[in-house]
Image (cartoon, rainbow, N blue to C red):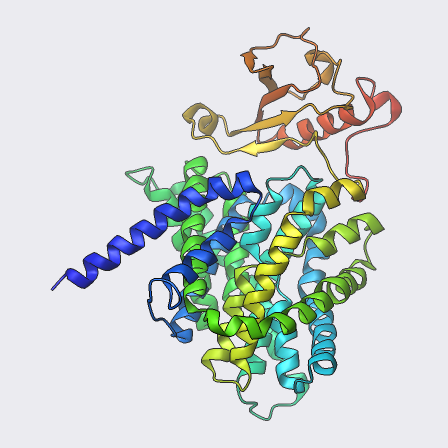
Length: 499
């Protein structure tokens, strides 16, 4: 009676363990892990082990569930102090930028591939959303200015909401409503979705700060429960559940809840599980026999997207803001596509839109090709454009009770070659009260520094900073990195020049 279940558990566990091991391998080889997961799905599918799977509706449902978890993790780890200055830019990228991208790709596909307008605009809509999982996983490995990282992460967290609405509108038969009705509907769903997210986040913060749960392990479950509740409440109200999830996640992640590190660790692990399951499932749904014919449409569409639509959408969105040309160029190149476009391609596929099968195949091939191209070149492109920030402190998620009790974070800072941090004594950093250099790793040997310890190039610093001192500590470190120990004498305070 249970033999089928036993076999499914065996295959599922084996795939999961291989996928977990592939993370380390993909990091060493410089290949995005999502491609490994897609390859696993293809390998166990009809062309490999022979598992037949063609249920686009189920894939769409499970894909939405996975995206809820992935967006939750992105919201929980987004810091409001870095998100606030770029919120307007990210919101414009996620709305006006999306519309520009849809129109440009739609026009290109219509004239270059000869597809009808509805299907052409569906190509544009499906591909207009940057992927939260790809952006979060890739950018956090790079040393970039907080403004750039926050802009891209916030955009990827917010643009799923309008894109899903537009893809659904293009996939279902028109009800004969005028254009202004459809525009109003999208506006309603976004506004109400954001309001639902705020309500769920505030309710979660109020509850978890006052609830004395009997186990620390219940707090992460409760936090995820509140974000899922935000999605469900938004869906019931016919609003954007994805936007509600992101807003609720940001509010909860910046609330200094009990056992915050445990919450972040749980969300991170759950997001990895969701990514693995999602990519494997999408690889399983793909039919390798059809993919050869999708290469040309995928390349043509991808070039139109990456070289024309994305740069134009960034340029239009950045007009009201002080964003330099180099930053705009990096924002354009770092608009990564991943699982989200493939999941969105299952919507017209499940609605049986004419040409949807070719759309799914082209999007699948496009994601594979351009993910390899963009993710492997992000670091050199950032260096070429001069937007790297090698001395930027990065948060380390460490589960420690003392840090939890004092509401502090553990930061890691590298002293790169050419940084003016080299040669500076620890006491000359003048970190604010509540921030302290606790350990220096030099030539593989760690030691506790004293006030007179002189920093050297290649040093790795561990810094403990309380919530109130963290932003000021990061600004001070950036200032010293740029102008040395007399940074403030030169008028350098470590602020982002674009803020």
